[in-house]
Image (cartoon, rainbow, N blue to C red; front, side, top):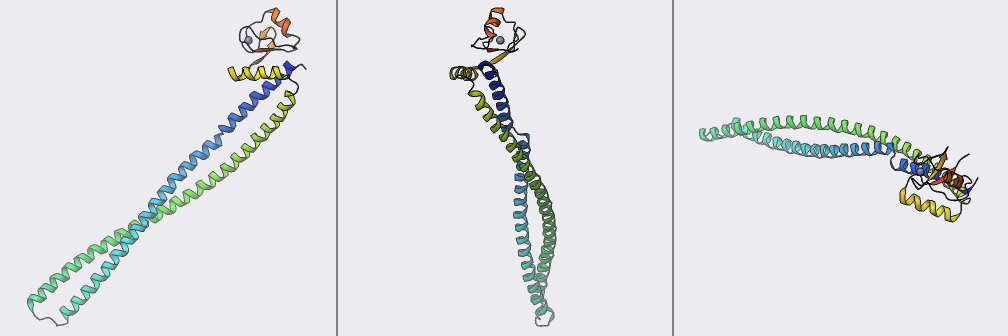
Length: 237
Ligand SMILES: [Zn+2]
């Protein structure tokens, strides 16, 4: 094999390497992971909000229960006085009855509120349980996907390592000046810069090559470039 042929092989490797590096950057499993992680963040936010709200509702409930307790004590004390025969003044009795009515109305309202708060707590508790379950399922899912991604990365990285070694072996078969030319061309125009000759056609731009060019390129011992696309030509038997 001549160095031009080695260069063609090296180019194949480079293109394959580039494809693998792109695949590494654009792993579809990583996109799935990103989506699930976004989902999880939303779930955690929901969970935080529900927990905060539950805390607030429980505090409010406790506060109202204390209030009910205080009011009950006040009602008991007034009732004892009122029905114990301690108070005889009709005006005072009327005042106490009025006070008792007001307290009982407030107590009933507070009891209704407590029932409402208990219902709210229950709803929040079941929401928290639901979100927790969903989070756990999604966390398991994301953890499996991370394992899958790590395997894919390891697989591609191993391939890339193998290819770098293979490239090193090819590279020593190619003169520095040709390699430099190839690298410069690759940098300037990207893609395939070495084109095999197929029949009398340039494998890069598919234009027919003049026979003078084919004669020059055939020995594969010098750099001959396609007059149309500028690629380095490689004769193939
Ligand atoms: Zn060409």
